[in-house]
Amino acid sequence: MRWWHDDEPIAHPRIIELFNSSLVLDDTGRYQLQIGADWCYVQVEDAAYEVRTVDVTADARVSVRLSDRSAEALDVTTLGVDPEGILTCRVKGGRARARFSRDAQYQLGELMEQDPRGQWFLRARERLHALPESFAPPEA
Image (cartoon, rainbow, N blue to C red):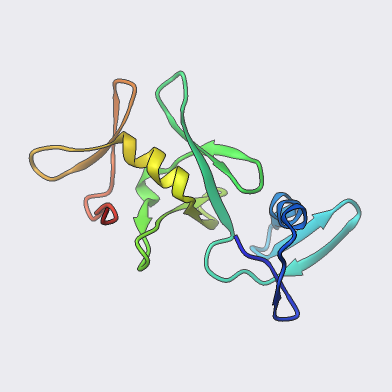
């Protein structure tokens, strides 16, 4: 994720990590940075969150860890590919968009299988999670 202030990119890695972990989606759908008692609204272009890691849980569910340090079950019905060939999904109860990091995209790709009819699935242990019929993985 990239953060900007006054049309200048923020480059310091600790500030970027602080901002990523402090991003909150409020009840009205607006994004806020909340750091201690201080907060401000921020404008988000494209995806507000980055999927950093993909995990398979003990009960064969697929989980994602996000740039705000939270984890949640992946809603496979929301998987898509943006025009740049990057995997995306909906997070935060479907209220926000997330883009997969390169590592997370690779991790999810390791779980993908296609059946003879062309349908794509995620294999989590012995459980198959069907992807939307319209899903087509990014080009390698």
